[in-house]
Length: 301
Length: 258
Image (cartoon, rainbow over all chains, first blue to last red; front, top):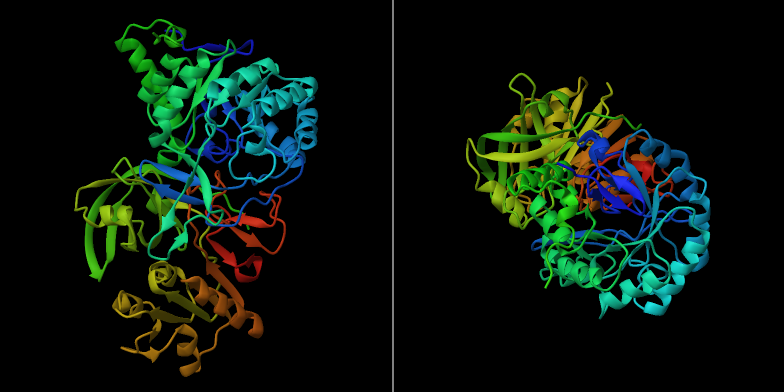
């Protein structure tokens, strides 16, 4: 049985990767999972300089999901290049670096710094709901999405994946804008903006008031958005949003994703990625699927 | 003092569970390797069986029985997750990851072991491990728990907010009322208590170690949810904050701002 998928002219050993921000740069999870078995590791977003992130509490559990407002805390590109990339290079997996910034210039700076580094792809985060500038501000207007994508492509040495926000009226329009801007692939969905209130204290639970919602409760929304976008663009889509099990991952592939990313599930089970890879294999055996690529976009009108 | 400990993801079996005070439960878990690896001040991530609750509950280790491969947690029912745990019975299974974080250092000096509220349980294992003169000071809101077990490990002083036993007030009131002194402080409890102890220790130039708490997600240092402000730039985060689940939960009091 073939588990390999093609993404941006590269072969991933299987379609399962990690979702940015839930897996650090893999070091902590390497105690629980064999990173060599992953299709790719997508790192936590990295910016030009270190970011302190938001005040705490930064997370809250909600029914079937969670809210986070980490605020893209990161050690900055210098330490990332010195420490995180060499760590990941020890493993036989693809390295996808998530890039964040407050301004176009900051994004460009990170993309340029990574040009000479041994990373396989870049994922441009224009969809973080928890920072005031950059992030989602770039991801909710199709003209901005196209402009940012074009600018990243101008400076990037690696394929550019644009990570889209679900907090928009038409995801297909955003997908098309990124494609027009020259994106090599799309990641979707980032988190949905949410809020939780402590009724005893009559206060917001998160210090940031709002946070990004993830987890199985958002999965049907992600499947729908992947499906709509897959029919709107020709570039491949990495599907994510509430994938907890192999069944969820397979659903995402059937909706049109070429690969999938596992995020919140890592918190629920540190070995989630391994279980999902194993589960996809079992499904393929059970349903006589010889090549996992047969599943991609197999469900449509 | 970053030390890398081995962590294990296991299905633990409940040996026994009992309610030792109103809404406070004591649970002994049989583990494969966690007990052997654990030390005082570390914690476990305990995962819910109910699928709608995705995040593990970080619960400090109250006691370790290496011979029996068992760990004990004592926790307060504070929400739906702990409400699920408290209904579990002997033989039931729970997924746990641990031991997590860095525990207390063990120094052979005249010590205060101070616990407040649900911060009291981890001090029991520390009391078992420390080989020094131990003055154990426990602060309760009202109902008293674990008292006899602490008495077997050192001289115990208690403070109660409602004045039902010991000193009427908090742990610092108990220290003053009994004229106690120490060369080192180990503490776990609510933030106001830790703040007061940090100040107390700074004024007297006493070494002070505190265990911090924050809402967590991954529990292993990847997600950056449970950070606290730090005095200096942290080597890992490269900013002035530290991961409580990884560099902590135990810190030198002057290392962290809260």
